[in-house]
Length: 211
Image (cartoon, rainbow, N blue to C red; front, top):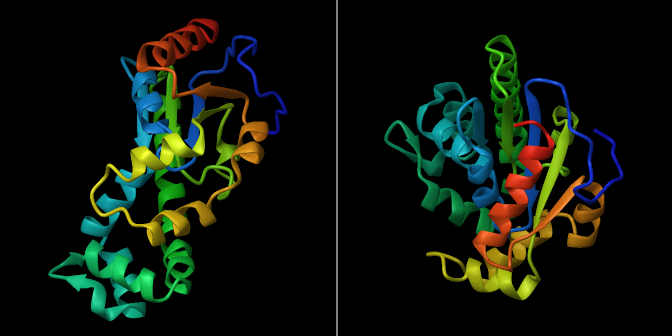
């Protein structure tokens, strides 16, 4: 998906399932937008939740992580607290983890798209924070970017448990600058103007795309 458009004047897409990528900076409201798209005949794949599930249940992935970071094991799964501590102490740990985790997440996303195609579903929504950074846009027919000014996002982020200035800075550093992400997307949806306005934008897009 190499479109340069960043507005919502796209022609209706006849392909089924339509693969919609949803991304945005930290605390931009992307998952809220993804849930607004979800519904009958539309599957929502949340990459963050998928990672957490894999860390609890994927024995091969758990073993690979523990081989590299033996102190993060907790019972038969991974301690997210211990893992966060390791990342905080040694940022290189994050790159090591991503090399283990990202291929498995991508394989799951592709399997969901294949299953949706076989079952003739209307759309698949891929909710991915690092969509462009991991080249997941190549899976998508259209990419929607959630956007809010940085001060709005920081206020939302710090309302969450466990957020610190160090973690905030680390998460921002992993992501593309807002202007680069917005330009790369097909549609940019403002999320600082109220949920009702955001929902109207989503519903208009669904109507335009025949969903």
